[in-house]
Image (cartoon, chains in turn brown, cyan):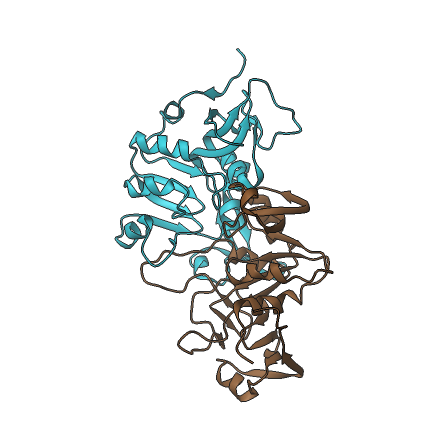
Length: 225
Length: 225
């Protein structure tokens, strides 16, 4: 099977969202997760700009410039939604009221350290946004990412090389070839794409990675492309 | 004399602002930018301003026109990266060392402003600990968690965008227009509320989202609800 697309990585993460939970989706790949939350479960999506209960992206006729999410997408509200100001929104985030935040990542270390705010591109300004607050404040932090950089370097590392967003916060990593748990002992592969051997996974990971006792094939339905 | 905070002219509402002022500007992702007031401030030709604004580079906010005009000495923000590969007006000035930047996590940003308006000079937070942003800051342990001391931010002028205001300065917001408005209004010695509609009569207390005590001037600018 080919390495997963962004949509397929997002689909896989969506399958692990618990019924009744409150979830914050970061901008970029994580926000795609909202398209794949199973129909039989009910979740509230929180957006850092104060929206609790983000609905589907707005159709052209519904678009209101005042109703946006963290990625500036024009959105709708779901039934039961509410809106607070930014100070209250981050009190909600920091106060441990968000069950899961799903974030993009440049690098994750074997102890759960996350680097996702500064890719150190010369002259481009920094962009922190709400990532540090979310990584520290949410009950669980999951990351969606490519397993390797475009030039083949590992992004799951012993120690992050880029500036940290937060230390010891990531518990689950979804990549284009695997689902990885960040355990007390370090990285543990829970699922692996068919055709990727344990040796290949180890070669493409920049830290020791165990193959879980119950490691399964990483499978995505054909309908998700 | 009956209190009436409504003013007709945007430029009159900022006529007493001085060079070197600390100016807070509301807005997030296209919602709640006080662009008419930002235009008036730019026309004033003030120098050495410090802007406290979520993004230094958002294309829909006229914040960047003040920066481009060389009127800004320092920006305190959470996002300073322009879209795409080219450099935004802010990034060019920053690269050339002509503008100072304090880029901070969005929850620390909103809480430092809220604290400024609430009479709290500083507070400890776990957000930012273990990152480059905590270097040189006081750290203390609470309940086994290492926290960083962050100081309040106050300002001279808040420009806040709302939907409606009554003569007393009570303000309502549309959807996610609220974002940083209430905290910024509380943290500045003078607050100008730019609203779509100024009401002749007091609004119901059930509607008020930003109470009159935080608002000094109201400027109605019209437009679609």
